[in-house]
Image (cartoon, rainbow over all chains, first blue to last red):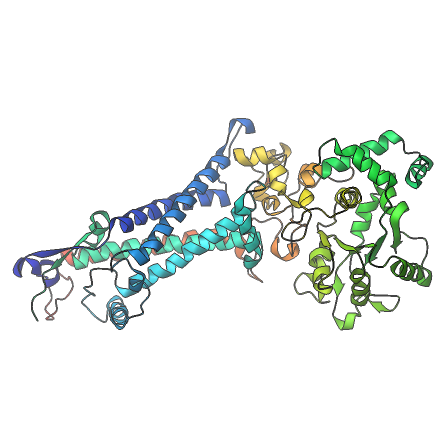
Length: 232
Length: 365
Ligand code: SF4
């Protein structure tokens, strides 16, 4: 019988810990849904695979897809801004200090998690928030999000009407060696994010299976369940 | 009012008053000015003192000169640029050799700080400037002297504006744009494109003659009237782009129907120019109009950044990454997903058969 999964029964029940506050859950799901929408529409924009027959005036396929991509991009950006704001305003599990390992405690967590994931250590980190390894990967993926947003804005700047404030982002085009290279970076970053999504899903479900603390459910409810600490 | 020199020239060449006014109206259109601007332009062009132009050719193919001449019948535009005010242009002037150089020296001496320098071609700095010399002087020397003493310098064509093809990787001659070769040059205006559109060059000069100032510029010092919008924004195939109708192969049905060239690598969405509006060869046609995707010739470093011309995505120094990044990305994501699913199923099975994780005291569960 697993002490991890069922010790609660023995040691006087489970403790309910509020880990993910509403802004964290909300931004998580807005980011998740917009990533799916942005990837599908983005792939079509890069490779318009639908062959539209008939007269041009009767159709607006690319136009619609681009509009959806644009609105989803705004939702994505807004959600990311909320999440980054919550890095400074949220609870301990949401704060930036939990994402970028600057304290000795987080370094230890990083080390333990690395040992756990490389099958050297058999018990997972029992910290209610992110383990330091996962959190570090989220911090990196946030950087990729920012890269996606910036390259997106640079590409967007070339198509806004004259006088739009978004023209200012055109000034960043040389940073990316021109618009085509900005577009290529936008593509590569999308694949990095999609691979991250797959790995993320995998680890969340696996953690739920092994750790039995409600990891998967916590992103809906906000709560995780831990066995009450026995006195050591 | 006595006849101006221009009016005489026009009569001499058999160009009617009507044709002249049509030209002025066309200039107003290119500049995005209202119709009422036409008389003002006509008055300025007719009566104002013409600016003195010096046309320098360095590391180039003379394509801009060709564009300007637009072989065939002389137009009012040629007349204004060529007969009236062009003091020095090696390719066009009758004088040659030291005679030509004397004209240049004399013009610079007499009109110092007042003339307009037009530069065509990039300026090589390699081999101590030995890659391009005129009358024994390095291009860099000449550019610094002539542009340095000009009221304004117009870099005509992408080579002069951004280095262009000579400056493309690996840039064997150390070619520079005017901006880089003559730092701090006064009133530099970049008229990029390969070649620059004669209509725009003429419009720029006419703007200056009419309003006595230079037009608003974009971040690459190109006039907004000609480079304020992308090709894609004014493209006649845009309706097909928005509908989702694309050419997939040269000569396919969509190509014959004039559908969008996006999938054939069109760089119209990344290129700022007024080609779709002004067109070429006196409005006859333009590249996309005749079925060829835009190659982005008006943009900085287009030879490096916009190539391959028939692909949507660029290459990264030697890797043919543009064409395979998305299939590879898709494949990698699929592989990772398959591995994750396999591992997941394995874990579930392991737990079912009781090989779950080990508890702290080391006993298996
Ligand atoms: S042909 Fe090129 S510029 Fe024209 S609509 Fe298509 S992508 Fe845009």
